[in-house]
Image 1 (cartoon, rainbow, N blue to C red):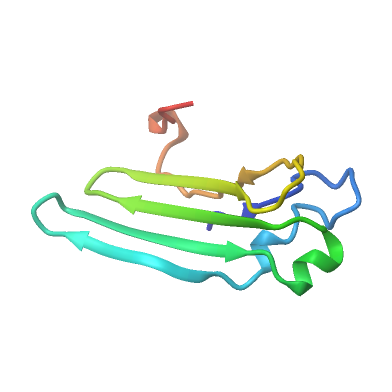
Image 2 (cartoon, helix red, strand yellow; image 1 turned 90 degrees about the vertical axis):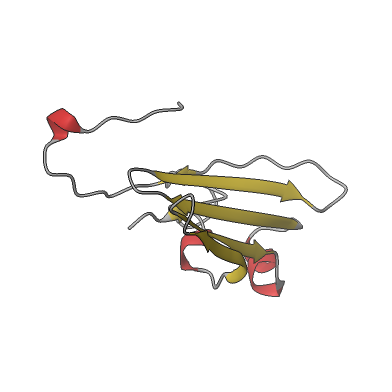
Length: 110
């Protein structure tokens, strides 16, 4: 799995360790597939709510997009500040991926 850690990654701070996004209920924003391009994609959405504002007083929207192809997995997290005041956050797509051999695993795009 790939927990979405947001708006706080570490346990150092006022929020629960790894934030609240990973334990919140997300909605499906969009999903689809293409047989020609052999891809499948889903975008999930998390918006601020009374429950999130109880522990973090900011208006936000998160979009988490996962794209699968024959030979790749792409994940993207987009953060939108819907409020008037700036806010700081940390986050991570905290992957736990099983691979056949770590010697043959690599990460692109960082």
